[in-house]
Length: 171
Image 1 (cartoon, rainbow, N blue to C red):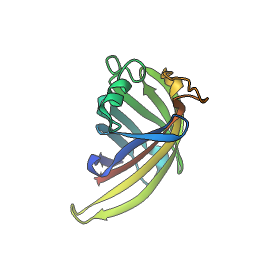
Image 2 (image 1 turned 45 degrees about the vertical axis):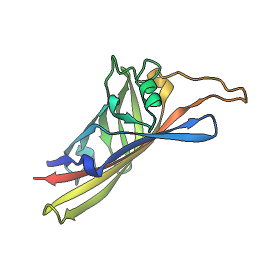
Image 3 (image 1 turned 90 degrees about the vertical axis):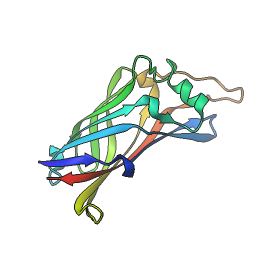
Image 4 (image 1 turned 90 degrees about the horizontal axis):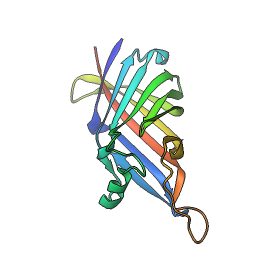
């Protein structure tokens, strides 16, 4: 069994959504944890739980961030966290239960382990993972939108995300 300690300073969790049918708006979550247990040499043995503090959302626009926290989207008054609990991890996929705004759906995302490296600053070792994917925000009750006079809608249904995580290997 390998103990992996999440390193938030060397990790990132970003997302993007289509806006006005012509561009993408990007954002990040600044406060989240990722707990991983299992044997790095046996990906099938790995299990992970990701917990995201929704109030830490940052799209570089306070008005938009505040709107995202309302019942139109994340409803942080009732649901302050997003969670992802893995069910299986393979060489290139991770499947688990994603809970957003109180609604849970099984999702499968792309997964990549980036090997193991020595860390010259700690005399220990580190490993890294990348998880990328797309979710349908409407499956989680986020149906807020506006029709555009030119056709289409203000916000896309699909939200793309990218997680890059670094972990210190202990034990």
